[in-house]
Image (cartoon, rainbow, N blue to C red; front, side):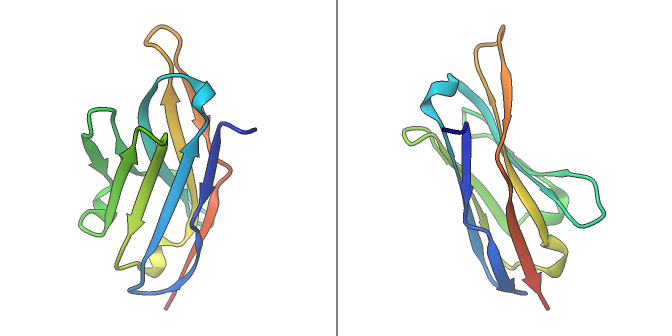
Length: 119
């Protein structure tokens, strides 16, 4: 068993869509923030989108209006709906979860899923 299991990556043409999923193990405790990061070839890992337990969200400027992050607390799952994909969106996408009580929080990373957007 691993803390986070990602799925949904793949190859898509520019303008297409993909939906990433990340299922968190129920034994990691209370989940606070769930987020998606990505790392493009030769670049640093960057935050793409994040969602808090109350549903509030934050997006990188580069994906606003195109990506939507959501979470299903009952299923311990976070999603990233990616529409109008661009070649610049290519990279490895990582799920990230901040869990635990305020006095004992732990940060978890998914294994990463490749997203490739062709021209």
